[in-house]
Image (cartoon, rainbow, N blue to C red; front, side):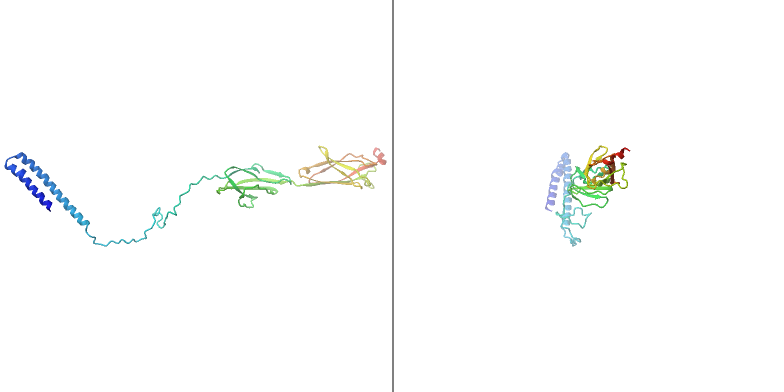
Length: 318
């Protein structure tokens, strides 16, 4: 209020000095300038008064005490921690302990194996009785540490540490499946082998016979012709076609003999033996060598070998 009165006083003094007196003294030029200044000062004064009135009203409204009591009690429980995504999981509370960084996953490297036996193109396998069937597998890439197998669809075994796998395949068609795994649990593809298996069987061949007295020199045993007794001799067996000495035995005192031998199945496909014997004292050999042929279907044979007494040798030339 004091400032307002002061401004009015200043305005009156200004008007008196610069307008009224110059007009009275007829100084029109200065009177015009003074009039313009009065308008500017009056405009500024009016603006200042309006601004003060506005500020007084805002301050008063701002400082007015509230007429209503605000309800500041929350209607829902305020979570103690901030969820990572409140709109997606409104009921989930995430703490620092439950936040785990996503580990960087290494690219999987499944084991790759080379199975050289039985190979994929090996369709038929034949073993002797002495041979053992063992799988030959070596890693190409990856780090296979365990293996499981399924033989002839009897079911998968559990994974076991890699070692030499040996077993006896069934006679005939076989299926073998193998799978490998690394330490990190990465499995290989399933390797499948199908093959026909045969194991050669041992065959016992035998040749038995006796030496007899061929009194009439006709190379066959007739009625009344007896065994060579009280005399022993050697019987040799030569294998055809190479004609090497296959076996050699001695006869008994009654002229009987027996040869028994176990051979591989493939060897017993056909065994041709020439039986060549030595004439004992008092006898001559007139007949040609006898050939015995044996195989797995006919593994034994019985022979009668003629000897002509020296006293009857003349019958051979009649």
